[in-house]
Length: 170
Image 1: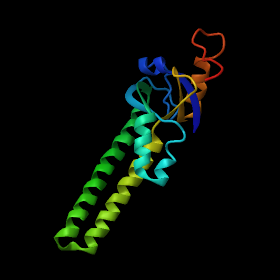
Image 2 (image 1 turned 45 degrees about the vertical axis):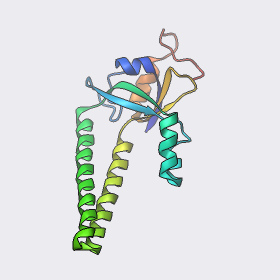
Image 3 (image 1 turned 180 degrees about the vertical axis):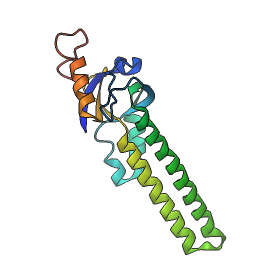
């Protein structure tokens, strides 16, 4: 996976190269998404404790309503993962309630398996989507987890000499 910079106003208007940001294939479908731009020091807090992570994320992140070129096949894969996550969450809830109504250890096992499946599915889905981190400038965002072809197309879009050229210090 690669990284690439884009102007926030281009993200909001959907004025990005018509190449799928995740697969690199030509794509004319724009998907509306809310990107949460989080500083690099925030995610490692999740390893330490979950509460400081959510507190820091809520105070330091910025939301951008973006229109991203994403291939329909990739969007469908993400939707399938969302369905799987819901099923895993329901299984965890059923196991949790079964613990209290006579299933004991079997209920605990179902709860643990459902919860683990949910966490793994959410993590995999997050890694399959486009990430974003802030740059030194408020009008530029750096994409993470994008296809190298999309990163190259972004670099060409903002190549030197154009009126939309990115500043050298983003």
